[in-house]
Image (cartoon, rainbow, N blue to C red):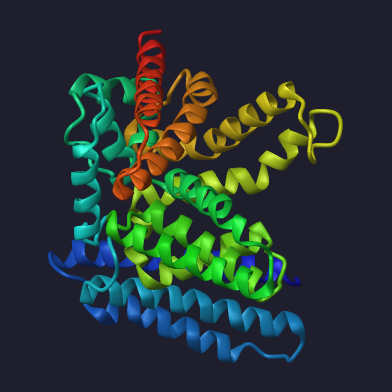
Length: 366
């Protein structure tokens, strides 16, 4: 094993240790009728560490086996100590800061004509869905678009693209590239913390941080390596996330994008690079939706006992409008804060919001 394969082996072994530690502490706590004593799962972890040092031989396979035992035991210890001490960041564990409250207040003050635009923007940008009418929330859920309302990697990814486009005008001098990467990491980190740091947002932030760090170090960013490094880093900080549906669905969706999406895109003949073929763009959008759904469907069914029948239609129609709406909302909020927001931009944002709601209402009624 070399490179990405080694990192994948270490990452998944550590994850297996976290899962094992979480299960062990849960079973021991159930047996004891209270918090699990440290010596239960801790003893197993120590036994694995001892086994790692007892493996004979100095070849690469033996060394790798020792390392894997150590990573497995480290994962178990992380889960055990997290359950005992309460250390770790649970999903949504960060309290929303004053920054998010300020953004919500600014959105409420913007002169939107539609009564649903401001509540929808607050849901998309800050995760606050309290102002949305129940029938709209139900329409998003029944159409398979509930992930649009819940802050996730999708939203941070759109903001990341907006930042890349906006800061690209500064040029490509080496110091500019470094400053751009640092600015993006800082802004995305603040946004993640301010909006609650849900598991999927943290995952997206780690992906962005690793990608931008690779750029600053003039290294090629490999999606598989980024995936494995982010998975291990997030679980090391907060092992309890392994039980979170948001964590599981977020990483499963990314696994589908990394593993299945390139294969589905390759089915369409021709070169994908720089292609302006509209049919190819539709095919790529369908391939993206199918890749995510194929990998997340088992976990979604396990947690929620549901499967969106029209997920393909929803993603083909609603996701482009969502991306456009978020770009318009960021632009309108930025200009409104400066006091120069044109009325046409407010009206276009209103129209995009009404269009998105119309789409999910139509799909939910099918």
